Image (cartoon, rainbow over all chains, first blue to last red; front, side, top):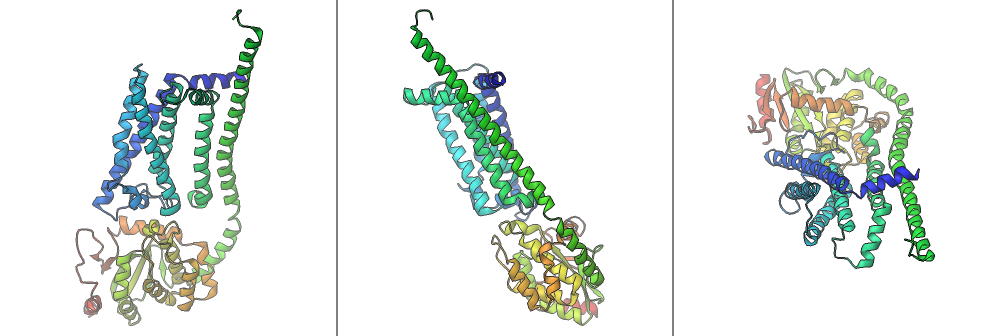
Length: 206
Length: 262
């Protein structure tokens, strides 16, 4: 029992796994951002339009896309994804090709992506509690942003890129080795799933 | 390694063992959390599927009581609740949440009811639910339209009066809409029997309304609401064209329909 677990956790620390996963997640996020940006244009052209992801009153990109939260900075939020995700893709591809980025660069990426991560969850909370509808592509952004942020944070902790005190850094590295970072991500995603099911269960399945 | 004093070596081994132990605990916790996240929705889904089991028992009775009077108003093939049998055919496509529909009805609702009772027009009401997304998850469009269709099936002579009450108390977009209790109260006010009101919560007409919505967009040629057809000609409901008759000015539509009736 201990062997496959050890094997998996060792694999999790490898560059190939981390950056491969980061590449995959950021591509998913970019795709979702693209769809949401395109939908925003369709809604702008025709506010009454019924989008193909307007499946029901509960599952509706249109409802979320028409909210003020969907354009917090005056333009569709998804545009930020179109700008930011290609940078992550570049980092992932370059790192897979064994490029080693300076610590300061990785710290900057971490900080900017932290903002994106916080923003993604703020949007989820808004959609959940205020807008009262779920948008499948937005949820995909929430998921992929979580995955990109976790891999980016993992690699920055592992490589000591965050300019943290030695003791803190060592403790975090130990946490990553035993898989606590993975546990945090799983708990977060499980919370999101349970929140959605508890509120929308009947209208999702029924 | 050999130079390490035994105690230090022991410490290292202990640290590794501790790490492996923690690792195992973390892994099992992860598996447990994943199991909860997967199992809870499944159990929930099964429970939700078992719970409505009593409903089908009551739905057939609701349908059979409705079917007895169904010829009264609701036509599946026309995707409409039909009122009157006059010469001029009027099709109205609407969503109870749509502000334009509210304006249209507050101008014309009384006139149309009068023309129906005079036998001048056949009024086909096509309730839609595409604005369910504007009622904060309460699906007001479907709830209101369902009540309207249920009344049209069972007690058709009360349906237009009920709709008129809803129009005059139309909720704003992006609110939760009227509550089920408020809808029931307006039905009562329109003289609908309690037995019919009690069926509202089953939303037995929800699929019918969704089908009507699809019919309006895909077959009736509607692009927006309020939509209006007179004798099959589209008067309102196209995006790039304003109304061919000024339907938002009181009396204009009525005069036009009376003229067509001759």
